Image (cartoon, rainbow, N blue to C red):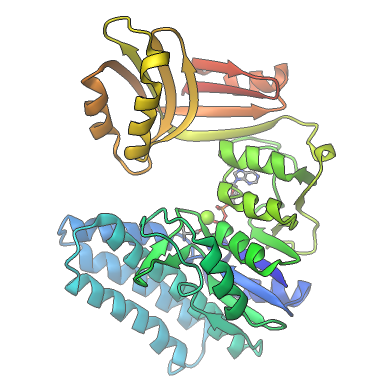
Length: 417
Ligand code: ADP
Ligand code: ASP
Ligand code: MG
């Protein structure tokens, strides 16, 4: 079986959905499991709904209506007959969501978040599945939630691999086109969980691992993995072949074309990953597989924007390294702050962090009780793998450099633009 994953950009409108069908007709769809994300920027729009819900905002209803309208417009563009079952099925999901919002009593933000955002994937797969049937491509729609079991760490749930493996082996039909949701799972009480933002690539890897799939293809709006994000760097070039190791490094440093959790399950079973263009599906794209000889011979640039550079120094010249590092890291874990770079001296300690869950202010207060705290907000972290002098110039010219770190393969620079 092959696993295909289509992300939000590929199904952002009716044309996109039609194009997914075109891709399948071009490359084949027997014995395929299709993992699909929410359409376009739906997850962001649902995050606004959740914020409005917790803020008790007057905009709550309007923000929800906007998401419903967006999907209904796509339906109108795809189906001639407004009595088609798909209109009922899609709107039933929105009715369920409205009911949840009216009746929910849980004050747990992350729990509510997962119950609400999951609608995005449920609706997108419902639309795609109906549209394929309508166009003569029979398929099997699967609710992913009973198959991927997780803990109840809502918004960043961890997979229970043993149970998931058993459920997936039983729950997926062979020799058929299966369609299911990315990003979602469920906990032991069957409440919906999510695997972390952009987690649909990871879902594809979970299925591949559990089914021992032949390959995974993630279909993107770029020709494959490039040596730089084309949104920020001119003249990015395609990397034809890279090793799992290189792909993990690139994803870890923030090359958002592949979700960082995707590679490990694939590497364990040596399942190849292809990153291809949904615009030109016959092009080879990038293949990710085993082999140290697959390292790129060109510098690779990665940028993470909106970072915080935090520096802690001890108030009484106590050697910070020995005494406090584990304590500081325990706090980072507790406040779910992601650390992207570390640098320390005898009495001070700097980290580049990402405050995904808006916990920094609280964390800062706790740290300030023990350390002198200083920080720069809104800095960028540039990473260059396989750097050379020219590559460093590309990143550093016309920028204020706050910190630079160099190892054998990798150079990292924190800049203020
Ligand atoms: P999806 O629709 O699957 O969610 P994403 O938008 O998350 O896809 O990922 C594709 C985007 O990743 C591209 O449009 C590109 O801007 C960005 N990107 C970042 N780094 C790279 C890279 N090294 N190579 C290719 N694309 C990259
Ligand atoms: N829809 C989810 C998100 O936007 C998952 C994904 O797209 O991978 O984060
Ligand atoms: Mg995405």
